[in-house]
Length: 442
View (cartoon, rainbow, N blue to C red):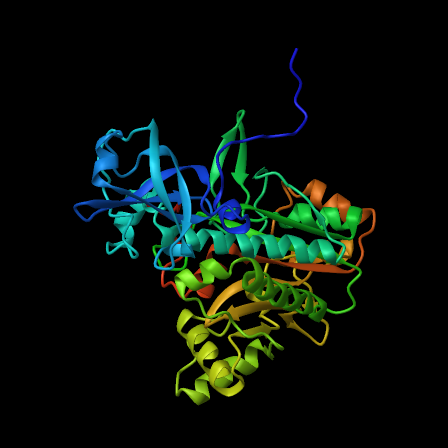
């Protein structure tokens, strides 16, 4: 009988092994995908793609004639001698002795993934997503996105938050409105979750501080560069707050931690994409009504929508705070109650506004958050004043009957945050497999 003891012994090496161990002049074995082939006549360079990056392998024509024919896209095992080569990527190179083919593609690549930049349209990249992601620059975007999510989890856990996972099928939408995907759930009406809002509030009564990273769904008929119908939300909710500014301070802490983590652990990807990370010392905060007036006066722009910020306004706000305060971020606070969900806490000094905020990053909203109503009677009264029905909300409301602490939280779009960090102009470029009005595959 065999037993597993969590020990994996392999003969093949990873790039980190080749760079960290003194293996120069020794025979090494490496497995990877053939990323590119450069034929210089008497000599050929075969570049392998590994999870850590690329490595150059070289052989003369005489050696290659004794070996199987190699083409782009193959998965292979290469045996050879490791040597230093300053001109090669990473300063190392493998002189090929043997090649074993592990798998072979059945058709040629639809895109030139070995090129440094994929000189094709975003639509082509998305149509051939399973291939385009193999390009070094394309996949670097999603390593950085991994770093953002990793920073979110690590920072919140360091602040006493507990990670949770909540249902994505529910009886009622958290935000209300018509932007809900409806479905039949065993002959009962159900919806796809617009956010984990109700559940993360419920869990504040259990753990005080909770966070979740998960998908959310919006049936908005938008075909813009900033909207998706399914995206990944970075959510947290925290109890026993004294002021909603604590939520903004927590997010500022996360953003600072994120930048430092990306510098430390994702420097290779930052360099590949030539990303300029934001400098975050402190983030300015300004009221909604004040910033509306400021932008109107500063840029001679008529206020068209008194209850929300238009994309053009967000862009001008970003421009103003970058020029005046050298800040890539700005918190806009005290949004009108009319444009916030029923659970948003109204400002006791002026109930037409709420104790809520958006975070703008380079002129685009990436976060929405605020303090929630924690008193049962106050919550029921606001639902009544809005003329809302409570069908499907019974269990959510029941939570408040048993007592809830003052609390609040936020949700940030991972893909949009990545988009702004990388300087992309379309959120689909920073989404692995986008779902919008026209795209259901791949």
